[in-house]
Image 1 (cartoon, helix red, strand yellow):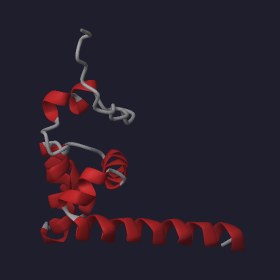
Image 2 (tube, helix red, strand yellow):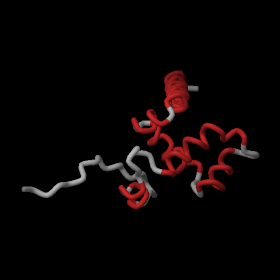
Image 3 (cartoon, helix red, strand yellow):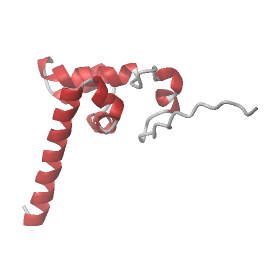
Image 4 (cartoon, rainbow, N blue to C red):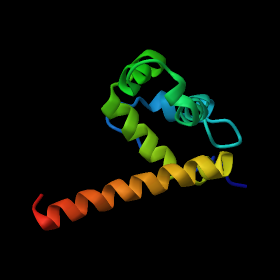
Length: 111
C-alpha cells in the first residue's frame, strides 16, 4: 500500500511571511491560525483602540500597516474566515470592493 500524504492545500506565502507562519502546526483543524483569529477580532474592535489604526496594528501584531493589510486581504479571501465570522468578513469584503470601485472610477475620470 502507498504512503499517506497530507493533502491540505498549501497557503501561499505573502512577501515577508515565513513558512512557519503557515505550517500545519500553526493551523488548527478549523483552518484558521491563532493569528488569523486575532486579526479578525482586531478588525471587529480596532476602533476601540486609542490612536491611529496603524499604530495599533504595529503595537499588537508587530506589522507595518502595509503588511497587515496584505495579510488581512489574503485572510478575507479564505472560506475558513467566512465560516468563522460571516458578518465581519462579508462587511470587510464589501468595503474592499467599494474602495476598489472608487479607485477604478478615479482612474477612468482622471481625478
